[in-house]
Image 1: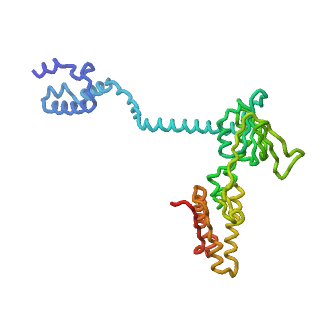
Image 2: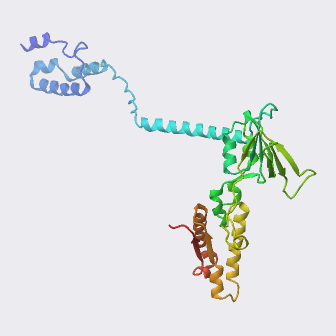
Image 3: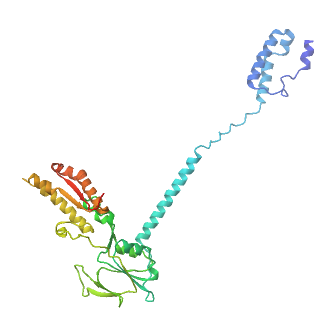
Length: 331
């Protein structure tokens, strides 16, 4: 029976057998050897150890090679941040290009259309807020525009109180009027002069050159079809005696420079040798008349100038400096 059992399964470990893994083959080899050791002489003779090892070697050699390992698929992380970074970079590049083009246009304006005699003449007096606002919104191609003003720049008056204490340089709040006119589509003429007389019947404006340097002609007339008067207003004294003689107005750049000069003169005079206490307090008492926007801003700037600068420069006046704001209307 043992011989019959062995002959009926001659190819149990042949190449047509089921492929096994090396670990399974090793376990099966150990079991077969142990079975052959305890099965008697016939089984031990049929399944000798070298034959079993050769059969396992052939079987292991015929196993197909494992497929090559595939690289792990990269995980799609931070996709939102990646797109945000790209959009931010593109926005920065577009902004830089737009800024560069704007600077180029400011420095290299286009050629202007020259005046046409068939168009009406518009004369604008002044270079203040009203006149400059009109110029910026006006289509100069429809008119022959002429600007007349003794001041050849536009002054940003809300920052004028800051110039009195040196917080802002006066050049920072001044824009040349010719720079504004140069960026209009049609050419605009500008005359630095004062309008001394308007003749509505003849429709002419008499102008006079009041600058320090004059040529052969300093007075002439300018005809107009339409006239815009934007010369501003004068400082009001309300009839109080001594206002013009003993006070400083704050309306022009020259006024701010004069106020700063007087403030520093008062400080230097107050610390003069052997100066009395009463005189020091008088010199360091600043009075601001008018509780409007300019007066309130100037009083605040003056107090900040004392707290931030004068106290550090001149410590001995820290208890004597005083600012008083006077306003006729109730709070």
